[in-house]
Image 1 (tube, rainbow, N blue to C red):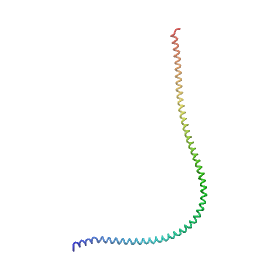
Image 2 (cartoon, one colour):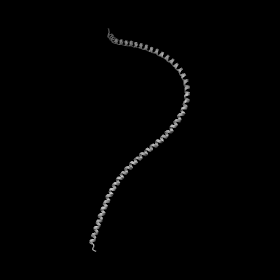
Image 3 (tube, rainbow, N blue to C red):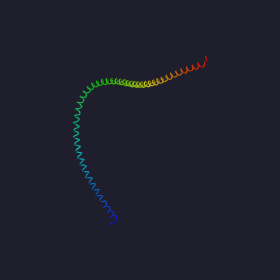
Image 4 (tube, one colour):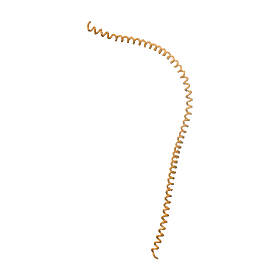
Length: 177
């Protein structure tokens, strides 16, 4: 046998297990595919049954809907009549409420201004009390200073009188008569 034949036989022998694996993989795939097709056919049959049931349910629902629509139309007419009466009452209530809210707003603003004025008066009173206390302290200090100065003045007057009398006596002694 030639070398090419030997090489070819060796290559065929080496590729034979690979071919066997590939053939078994294809067989397995076909088997799984067949099972998947069977499962899908079962699903299809089930879905087809559900579709028929859904069609029947939709027909019944349409019939019920048309009946309900007719009844609802009559009910809506009655409700609209009631609603118009209620809306007129509601509008009068809302108008009254808005008037009262405006009045409440004015009262709240007046109350806020009164509170602000009250706080201002309290601050003014506290300031006046503090100022009065400071002025009373100042008056007390001034009275103390005045008393001290008055005493000093009295002492100076007495000193002046005594010095004046002494000077008069000295002048009288020095001047002959």
